[in-house]
Amino acid sequence: MCGIVGYIGPRQAAGLLLEGLRRMEYRGYDSAGIAVVNGHGLEITKAAGKVTMLELELEGKMPTGTLGIGHTRWATHGAPTTPNAHPHTDQSGRIAVIHNGIIENSSAIRKTLERRGHTFKSETDTEVLAHLVGEYYSGDLEEAVAAALREVDGAYGLAIISADEPGVLVAARKGSPLLVGVGENEWFVASDASPLLQYTRSVVYLDDGEMVVLSRDGYRVRNLETTRISKPVNQIEWDLAMVERNGYPHFMLKEICEQPESLHNTLRGHLLEEEGTARVTGLNLSDDQLKQVERIVITACGTSWHSALIGEYMLEEMARIPVEVEYASEFRYRNPVVDHRTLVIGISQSGETADTLAAIREAKRRGARTVGLVNVVGSTIAREVDGGIYLHAGPEVGVASTKAFTSQVAALALVTLRIARLRNLSILQGREFIQGLRLLPAQIARILERSSELEHLAERFLGTATNALYLGRGVNFPVALEGALKLKEISYIHAEGYPAAEMKHGPIALIDENMPVVFIAPKDAVHSKIVSNIEEVKARGGKVIALINEGDTEIERLADATFTIPVTLDLLTPILTSIPLQLLSYYVAVARGCNVDQPRNLAKSVTVE
Ligand code: AGP
Image 1 (cartoon, protein in one colour):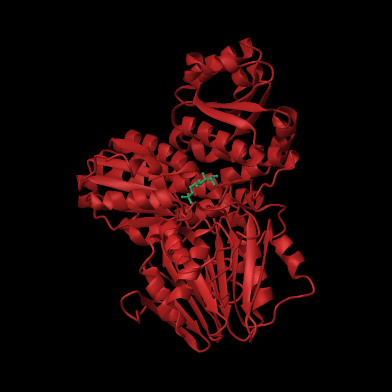
Image 2 (image 1 turned 135 degrees about the horizontal axis):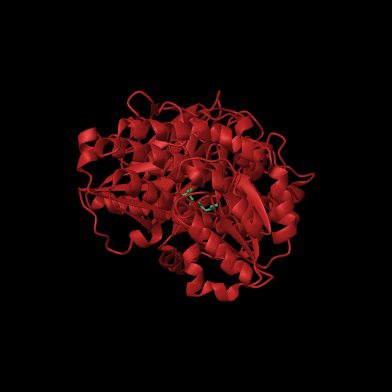
């Protein structure tokens, strides 16, 4: 997704903007640019490709000025070329705009402006917005922006400066996240906290429809109707070190290795051993309200959708409540059967995924109670649901989601435990479940200590593969899906996850000696069935890698390679079985020289449809 950063204060803006763009690279982008007001005009530099290309453009000619905006663009309208990179200017060339989102009526506005003699240099909707602001500009940038935004439909997070107002930066949001950084006599706007943390942890979250006017002595939040709105200043709990790599070669490996701590942080404060239940007051649902829930819908995208599937197994098994898991992009358009008796759970690491946000809004519109399981504090989904649980997994920068996934499963376990204990789960069963949860961080640490075994397996089986199959049963079927997604999204090897029993209904035709098959095969209720599935694959020459519990000699004898995981409760095995699959995909991607943290075509948070 696009990244926005803006600055006004005593420092030189250009270097600060470039540093900010570098800290947002993980969001995924294909061009970048900055604009600085230098006292007599606007200096704009932009380049297709990575921020390093922009830095090359700026070599020896860094603009001077203490007001500026910077942007990393993930192309939606128009190819990732230099002319399409942001910032874009108005007809006069004295107003610069950067924008994250889509202006849906930009072509109609463009035609109107062309009839008035405007000429455009790019194919982007953002340039149309810049020209519209210019059209309204008569010496007051704030009012020109407000007038223009009253005319546009669609989503935006934007920042605007003018050569004629060197003391003003105007920003606005509708559908794309934007926050204000409050420093010591300096102010910032950004798409997320990462560019701000080295300067300030005091932030103001803008809501949809709001604007902010930054000047050299402060900031003022408003909307299109009223010129002043009071907003709280929040303290970000993350510090810079948490966002940086801290010596790891990739953010993804850092975040995989953080899972003992991130899982502990997700569970912290929620486990009530005495009562054998979980404290989930953040849901803002009383026990009576939870008892009245007749059905649960869990909606999410990607990896978060996989954790939702695990939640379905947990809730139906322990709480005996019907659960449906819906792709958010489907749920929002299919006229879902949802009402006040439905609890809708939205799962999102970023809290900004457009489809998941829209699905939650649709659920609310139909009268459902909505809760969010979200990692980013203050994100849009977190602020729009009726209640929720923060994952507290810390910033997840790598595009491939890892620690957020295991924390999402842990958060679902907490919700399950609370509801189950209100229904038919005994206090002893509740305490046993809590004990299982408490052991997980240490068990994850034991798996991480043996990462080198997975590096070896990666080279031996998957380094040259062009396809792979991941198979699991029961609550580990979603783990098969997640393992396959990890492999394909960072190593670009085509991989599919399947219920192991489904092989004989078609996919087994794919099996030959070139097809590595990864089985997730803990000693659970369906272990003997998985053994048969492994034999079916071996009989056709397939290469089998199996994740097994310590001491499983039966599969050890059958498989070409195994990796053992500690024993835990059946329903908690996904938190352990997913870790080796994260590492396997990581080592394959590294072996193939792929860009692990910023895989091609992908963004960390998909804030557009
Ligand atoms: C997972 O590795 C991907 N990065 C992607 O599928 C991601 O899970 C999905 O886009 C949902 O993101 P969210 O959790 O921030 O809503």
